Length: 485
Image (cartoon, rainbow, N blue to C red; front, side, top):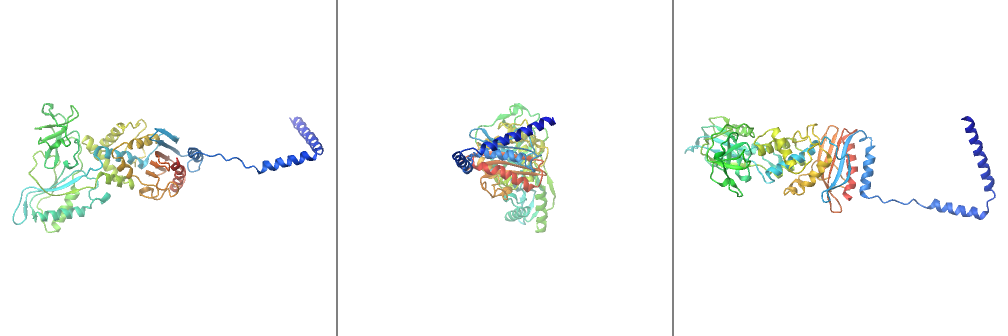
């Protein structure tokens, strides 16, 4: 091996010597021509290659794959065109990741789908008996609620408990009530004002005044008593007494009688805190209340009542806006249970989950990789793929409430949880729901491009290195070019 190396070295010396000798005999005009060509080549600049926006995004993806913040992370990304129904750019789009608070997109959509953006929860103050000349109410006060998730919270423009109680006391004064000899009874009902085309399933509802009271379960009801409601805008305007979703034909029916069993599902909580606050404030204001606060879940023989006043919640549109803008976990969880009640007549986490998944399946959402645990996304057991989120958001564009859904999302650099992100070229061009858990950062929503397109996207990052600010910077690097697509 050493002899071979020596041979090659000697050969190299001989060749170089021969080359030097020959170069000394080159004519001068060849030398000048060579120098001119060398100068020409030296002055020529390399040709620039124009990159498309998609190329730029793909290069960013490749660069971020080796970035110290994302090198060992699990992450996926997709930009999707709802018009062509094709992927524009992607990375790991079919893998499932922890979505964090982007889960609220699924929860709030289900609420809008089942209840409608104009839906309001009612809390009504009523009385029974008579008011004598001295202002003594010889009867009971009733507070009939409907599961308002914003009651007393000041969220989304809701009133505080203090304000509601004050309004109730003023309304009683207008009626001349200065003393109450009975109880303050709290109940849960479904109010007619929302003009829903159906009622929560698994419960028999009795029509009473401007709402429906729960009286029992549909389990074991006699199908011979059922009659189909007349098809009209509000079937509940009929004078029939009992309404429910028939367990036999899965349609809204009514019956003139009901002698079935008691309720087996969970109702929304009656407004106990409000009733207690009202009683305490009445006593402090010099309006004695002899009785106590008591709940009546089922009332098959309701007393004749008269309305004193009613409090209305903000619209569902406003509550969804609050939920998505500030990523309010409590509202999201309340909405989850409310859709479970609206769909199945059962205010539980399990029924809420079932209602959301059922709603998604109706929209052809790919649930094969979906793990949906709660309404807010707080659980780290949630799983979803970027492509399923992007296609879901594309499908939302066909919904009648899409404008309200879209407007509930934070705007890049301007509002909500995106107010301190995207101050560069994507400022005001991205509308998206954020998500944050420990070592989880996510974003999903819409891109308004400068060419007039509306694209959907999902970016889910799990187990990143570094700080939250560092991963947010990488998210901006990846998404900024998309506004030029």
